[in-house]
Length: 121
Image (tube, rainbow, N blue to C red; front, side, top):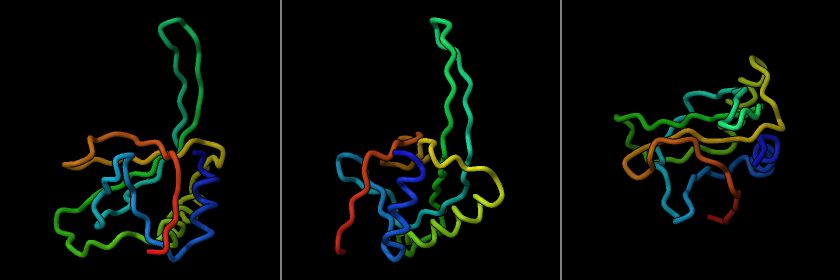
């Protein structure tokens, strides 16, 4: 999913809690913090000498050891962080958005956003 689509969906439901889940339905811990937003640019050459270039928006999430409230961040809070960062560095709205995260249930990785779903809860 590209950054502008993800951010646009959050702007439609700012009071909703953001619960990140994998394809099996397992969710990350509710105590997560957004610790870094990265505007990444890649210049690469593959084994066939093909040049590739792309940009990504990488959102780093982290679970502090001393957090115990279990609350999931609201869309409004993530949006306020995103908007503040977007005034400081150029975030490409057409770049793919990924989430960098890892815990005992999720191997540390950059995760793609495949879809956003909204429920009444």
